[in-house]
Amino acid sequence: MKIKILISSFCIAMLSGCVANPIYVSKDATAANPNPSASLAVESTLTGTASYYADKFHGRKTANGEVYDMHGFTAAHKTLPFGTIVDVTNLANNKKIRLRITDRGPFVGDRIIDVTLAAAKELDMLKTGTAEVRIDILKK
Image 1 (cartoon, rainbow, N blue to C red):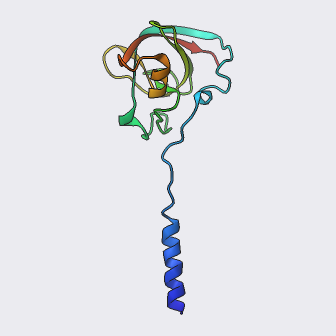
Image 2 (cartoon, rainbow, N blue to C red; image 1 turned 135 degrees about the vertical axis):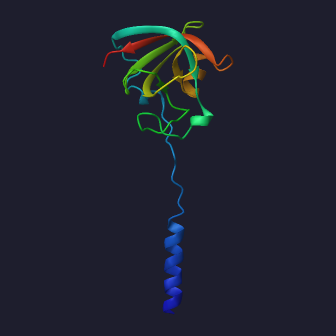
């Protein structure tokens, strides 16, 4: 009887360790800024080519230690401090999204920012893969 209890306890303990643990948690647009419609002062502005990154990096750690979520609203920039809030505007269609810098890059050509898949959808740049953008760096 003691052996059956011991074996049952062991099996229960082993099975309890098999609970799924998500790698990432999706964030909505408010994750970048608690009030995305709030008017924040523009510190400076950049223009250049944006691209997006998605599947290959989804679930991996970003340069600031967060887990990359291609469905979130974040971006990679070569030099802006982590946590910087930026408004990115597609100059071809004036679509705009507010993002938070969490990663480093892009490291291809003369591109100035990499955005998530979700941000690229909002900016309507999925077909081309890149877009000419204006980046408004916002004061905190």
